[in-house]
Image (cartoon, rainbow, N blue to C red):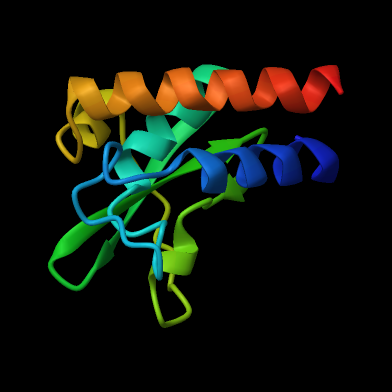
Length: 119
């Protein structure tokens, strides 16, 4: 994924995240609780693999595309992450979200990206 596409996806995610896509969302920390649902939607758009890293007692999900790590929700943490890059999958990432949150984020992000790439 080139830098332009990465930036467009990140900006679209910021505009798309809401209380509807994660019950932990706040305007001060929009990425909070968005890791599972975001990893799923990014995989839908870009392919690649879903990876995970243990943060405290919970798993944090992100993407690996063409051998490169993309963590669009790392800003939810107030620390630098020590990535373990443990192999994961859609089932595990889905355990971190639900069908409604996934459908809402996917619909929003597809609209945002269509606007971004058409302009």
